[in-house]
Length: 391
Image 1: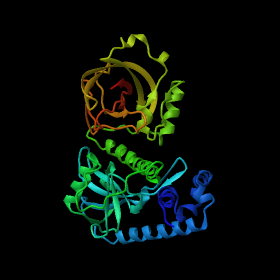
Image 2: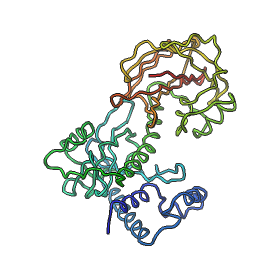
Image 3: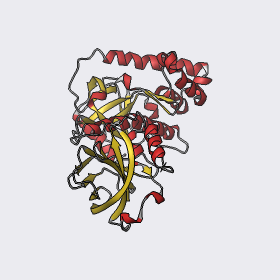
Image 4: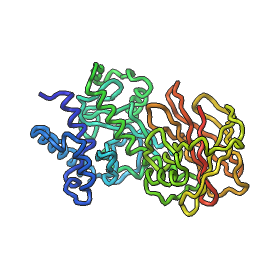
């Protein structure tokens, strides 16, 4: 009997287990062995689950091949697109397969960024807030749109279009994002969630999938912003962490950074490294730590000041980095809002004036959320700044 529990099992395999070409690739052996150590499906897979997984993979692969036959189109709202297959990646022993997404907006806040909603094909896992679309509405069969799982991607990270849906359905998804029960009369209503419902754990899985691909896209988008972006020699967040710890012993992170930018912005240096001369710690003025960068290599850390001028709720604030050199060049800022229990949130837009040290940030947050603003000012010719304030 097909159940939601079994559907969740298949979803975990479909989202986070490597396909055969990866399992059989000798260069992937170390990562695959790590995966086998934590994955109950790949290490001790039941025959019926194995057959179901192979059948599911085959059907999705057929859809991918079919999608490749479509003519290249400009990225537009309403299109269904897989992320490019080469973007698949290992993370913490799991192999994340690129999801199907629905384009909601060409936002253009930074460059070629688009707003997307994640898609899943097994409607038995749909819950409140999901929009179920039958094959009469889509070019890709029965599926549902996760209105609670919307994020930003680079348009260049998307594969070819499988087809599209009309604007009125896009409007319905946006309405569901704000009000999960705002269903029009024509929709199929998902059943409410129950205690220990498999769909709760499915949503946790889907959030991880979306974050895995979105965080990479957002990092690249930030590099393409108008302000020049520092090119670091470090290939990963762990390498940045090692570099900072080698310079300042005792540097720590409250959460494990997933990108180089997070490693810089979320770093916390020991209190003894911050001299009292940096100024009084008031609500308007905070301490900042500068990091000297040369040829992409972190050289040294130097504390300076940070002052917040204006703040509107937790969404918009302006301020200034104090004590910067007179001729700061080729600099940029990295920002995250660190919210307990959630992934670090980058701003939807920001402005930075290196000649004065002034900045303006704008975040998109759910009402009532608060966190710590963490950031880095980066300059190849001068230095990089880390600072933290309470929002």
